[in-house]
Amino acid sequence: MPSGLPLAGVRVVDITHSIAGPFCTQLLADLGADVVKIERPGKGDDSRSWGPPFWEGISATYLAFNRNKQSAVVDLKTPAGRAIVSGLVSDADVVVHNLLPATATRLGLDFDTLTESNSSLVYCAISAHGSVGPLSDQPGYDALMQASAGLMSVTGHRDAEPVRVGFSVIDIGTGMWAALGVLASLRTREQVGGPQRVDVSLYETALAWLPAQIMSYMATGVVPQPEGSGAAMMAPYEAFQTKDGYLLVAANNDAQWQRLCVAMEAPGLARDSRFASNELRVGHRLALHETIAPFFASRTTAVAESAMKGAGVACSPVRGIDQLMSDPQTRALEMIRRTSHDDIVDYRDIAPAVRLNGERLMSRSAPPPAGANTRAVLAQLGYGADAIAALEAAGVVEAQPEIAAAP
Image (cartoon, rainbow, N blue to C red; front, top):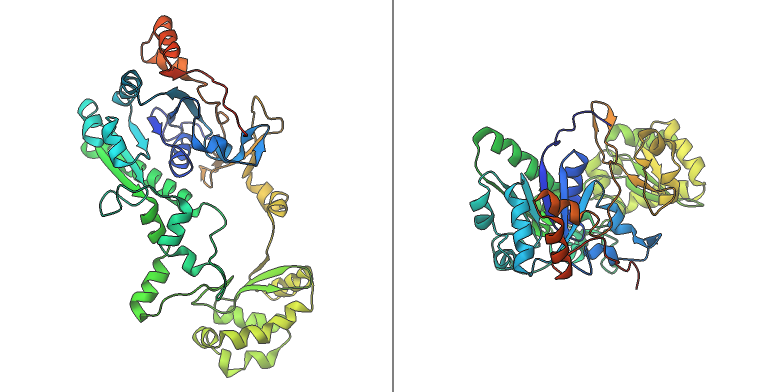
C-alpha cells in the first residue's frame, strides 16, 4: 500500500445509501480519507437487503461499495440523532449525502445550515435529476435514468425490446463524478478557502455518457439507434459468432481493415471498393457483416482469435466473469485481492482501478456491520458511556444491531 495516502487526515461524513453515494465515499476512503457512514436504525443501507446473492448472509452489493469505512447507526428523525450528525459534520472536511433536497432541508442537512457551523466544509449533494429544474425534487434510480436519458435507446439490438446496460453504470459513474468534484473542491478550498458545494446527479451522468451520440444527433438530425455489439461510427467493430462463442473484432481503421483481410486470406476483399475506407464500410455495414461473418462461423473462437492476432488485428473473445477471474492479466494487475473479513473465509474484493507511485491501493478494513463503530464515533464526539447507553435505550442510535441479510 502506498505510504502517505493523499487523503490521509481528511474526515468525511457519509449520509448515503444504495450505490452512487457509497461508491463515491469508498473511493475517498480508498485514497485514505476517514469515512463515517451514517445508517438508519433497524435497516441500515438499503443495499444490505439487496439479494440474492449473499455471501455468508451479507449482500454482495453492500460488500462491493463499503470497504474502508466506519458505520454508525443514527436516527436522523430524532433531534438527538440530528445533533450527533451535526456534531460530526461541524468537525469534518467533507459531507456527502443523497437525500432529496426537501429532506435535506427538513433534517438540517442543507448547504446553508451545515456551513453555518463549518465554514470550510466541502458539501457534496447527489441527486436523481439535479439541483434545478422541474424534476429536481423527484427520486430516481439507475434503470430509470438509463430509460429517461437515452442510454437504453442506443443499447441492445434494433427491432428488439429495450435493453439496460448490465450493471449500474449510471450509479457508478455518478459516484466517480462526485468523488472528482470533492477532490477538486478540496483543492479549491486549499487555495481560496471557504465552503465548497458539489452537485452531481444520475441524470447528468447519464447525459455525460452520451457525448458522441448527442453530438452526432446535433450534427445530422438523425436519431442514434442501438448497434448491438457494434459502434455507429466504425466498421467492422463488433462481435462475430464462432462455432463455440463470440469474438469481438475491433478493426476500427484502414490499417486494421487491411490486416483483417490478411487474416481471412481474402486479398480480393481488401480491394473491394465498397470497403475502401471506414466511411464506406459504415455505409455498407450490412454487406460487410454478411461478407465477414462466415469466416468466424466456420471456426472456433480460439482458432479465429489466433488468426486475427497473428495478423495484428485487435480482438477478444466475449468472456464471462468466471473466465475474467482466472485470466493471467487480471491476476498480474492484482485487481482481485484477498483481504480479511470476520465472517467470510477466503474473502476478496475488487481494487480501485488506479496505482499510485506504482503501488495498488489496498483494503484497510472490510465493509463494516451496521453500527459496528457507533459507540467509538460517539466517544470521539465526547459522549460518555452513560450518555451513549441512554441514546441506545431511546433508540436514537444502535450499536451492532442484528440486521437480517435475507428475507
